[in-house]
Image (cartoon, rainbow over all chains, first blue to last red; front, side, top):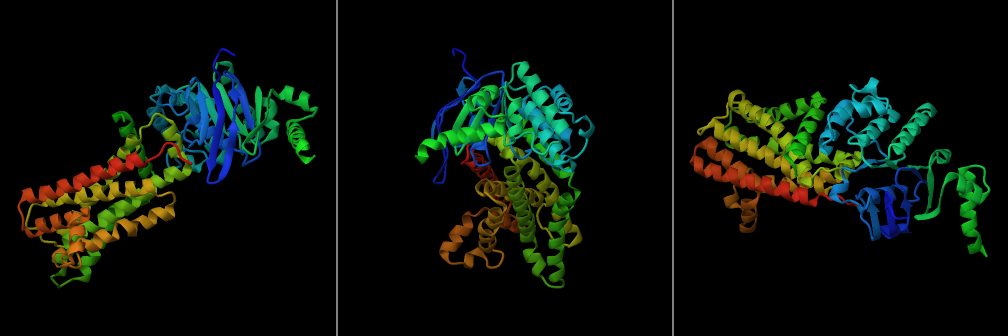
Length: 243
Length: 244
């Protein structure tokens, strides 16, 4: 591949205390696609995402994002990040939150209305964020990440706690963004979301155990759904060790 | 750092507080009530005239320290700090933004505390009331910025609250409120002479009793200012973009 991917990691290691959270990860996330990062909780999904946005202390290896080392000052405007906790100010209204983040990003003021629209928060724009439901707060957090139209969106479990209709709407939004050229790196522990991704990375115990398209993964494992495919991959890896 | 982002951050912090009227009430009323309480305890004695100026230094300092050290930790816990540090916000923008917002609150608080002590509690002031006000504001700013510094070191609210006895109480004990610093053991006197709160107390006493000229008081304010600037710089430097 001549074109540099959205995210390239090489031998990425992260330690927390004595435990190794990421064990020499080498992954590549192509541009302009919705790439799902799936795995059980504790597998290192959030840590990998923190590495990509440059807020994680790294023990070894490299992370290249949009052709630059992760965490470079110039990347901070080009990468949007939604943490697992809806990291917005509860004691500000939705609009006040977004206006502040827009000013930090030097995004045009009109962006605030655009992202409110994209995340369907028009009815809540004047409400205090703390008074919203968990799912609505997550959408405020997502809206903040969409400000300034970043080239890469790193979304840590953005659809947790959303009703199925909203979830499907958000996945629709993700694909519209990808069609317009944005790269998305979306984590989830909900296996049924796997089918909605263009490409999947399965993470377990700090190692990538599969990197394929959803269809490719199903064909390779002969499984009917992502959950079963995940199990099949784990069994196939562990089988030689048992002998 | 960028002035635009710093101002935006200060404005955002003030906007948050505006949505929380109880905090505004507490910030503005509590130091004055405590000063009033001290005045009442020592009614009909000369004690309030002696320690009243020190109380103007003490209560706003403690209140501002506590409020600031907790509020920045909230940003850490809710993940907003992580989001901001992944954005183009400078560490200095964050710390100075907070210092500006809480500095403004400290200014209002000091104005009310000084007015209350002088006009309601009858604290007699020999020197200029404006100079007294200037010292009080510098002192509240000191509490704010030391709180920011403590917050940069603390990882949890529990730790932050314990920075208060660790950083604030020694300054109160060595500041010369209970025992004049001149009659302390040499080592403690020297330490006390370098602690910023001592200078705030000295300056307020000097203005209240008219014992020194304005130039002497401004030197003390300058000393407080140096601590304020130092705390902001160290606070910004200790803020880490990358954490474990």
